[in-house]
Length: 366
Image (cartoon, rainbow, N blue to C red; front, side, top):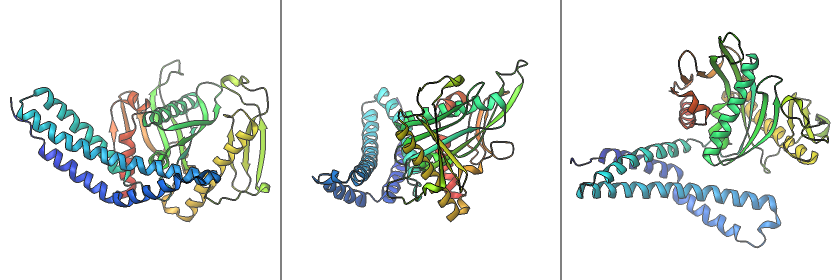
């Protein structure tokens, strides 16, 4: 049995991990964790609930980051030992395990490397994502629902908490729009590269002749407002409407006027929420979404070059950022990064890590 040589692969992985550790400034992170732990142990911490939540959230995020880096380093050291044992004992099963571990570490260290690029002002924030159907009739509304499921599945695989705040169902198939809150560190930094127009090409299930149909949907991603942000919304600038929540086909799912729609008169931004049971809860959630969009609008105006405001996407020909082709061949391709895969079913099931990593790298170099 031949000797397994993974020295070059391990050397490259170690160099990448050392770069990530240096950029992350591990000693500084550990000092910050120690300071936050002292604050978290203070008996008076929860006298100020908002501050306590910020302290515990920051502590959890930094601890997870340090643990991830330390775990990767430990696994890399174990890998070297595994290769040594496999070669000394001529253990083929151990050698195969080492080869598999190299693949896993390459992927995970690559994702960790991408996260070091998420250093924008709002990249560490949670996110608000809105998906809207565009041109294409029933195919477009069905496509919008497919995208909603795709992103929910991606978040589920990441272990991220999601809440669908509002869904506008189409008269036929699918949805006209949906708004989702993704409560996870760096959700905005990762998902912001998904903002834009998405295009689907397939044999239409809504066409009796089974002809190929092209449809579009737009994705908007904004950072979630935090308590420390100052986004004043004068009462005179908004109009609040209440209505009954409804589900597919217009069937009433609530017998009281608990759903809330808020219109920001100066900008024309409209948000709604019907996920919560009470009108007050829905109003609070809708205001949070409105403030998040106003924050993004302010940021966009201050730095127009970034053009990250989701309203830029028109969900029609000529401006799509990604194509999902299911006929006459199978392919999903990002038109900005040229990253592509030949398995649309896997992508629609939430396999988006490759697209997001490529998008983050593209954004840093464009």
